Image 1 (spheres, helix red, strand yellow):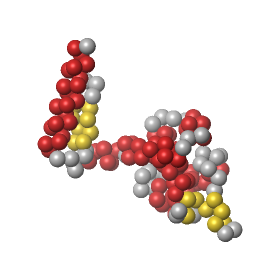
Image 2 (cartoon, rainbow, N blue to C red):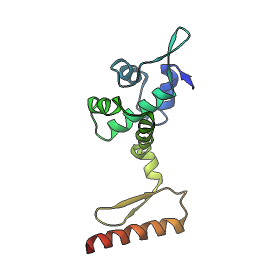
Image 3 (cartoon, rainbow, N blue to C red):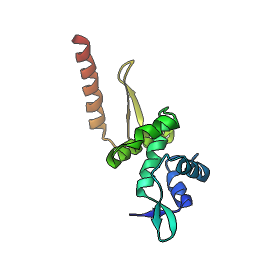
Image 4 (cartoon, one colour):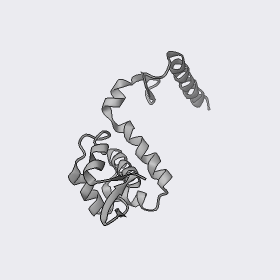
Length: 139
């Protein structure tokens, strides 16, 4: 288990969201958006668990959730679920999305594909989704 100061945690989180600042991390801690801090000796510290919760809070807030509703959602959630929500934060990073290729499959479906995906796989994914949409119209 890694331990962090508020400043160290903020620096890590700024890689995900450059607009986040130390004041925000402390505010989220103060209002109970994340679990209570751990004790390491006589100091209160942040851990990886807090990092996961803060990433989840950022992802939820970027998806349009209010802080109150994000707090309510995370309150009784298992850590594995919190981690999954936090992993969605990258979906809201416009610089990452802009690096991807965007393919319009239909009026309702757009696929964003990482440049790491092979051209063959991209073509197969787009074809599969297009066929699925055609099949949906027949039902």
